[in-house]
Image (cartoon, rainbow, N blue to C red):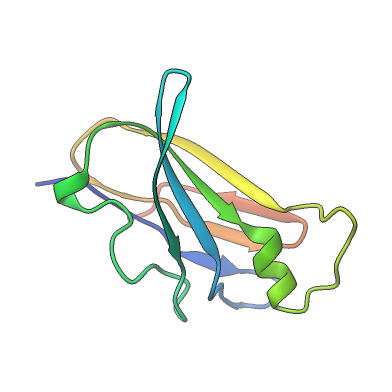
Length: 117
């Protein structure tokens, strides 16, 4: 089985998928942080393709950066100055060639994540 990476973002305050949320994927190698790609969630709060497909997968340390502030602004969530949650970085390791699913449950004042399936 080859490894790959997916995500899913749910807006728990509004009770719906977080559509139109920008996500950046970085590979972390020591002190180096390399941008691999930028994607946007679709109407289901998912990306149209795997963020890191099997042919690009490598074990190691990665970071998903969720641009929550821009998304919250686009939904009409009342703005704050500064916004409590703006950019949410999630750093995680992938140690085996498996499916890694890293979802984000988002509201204007909290978020949670877990290794999903």
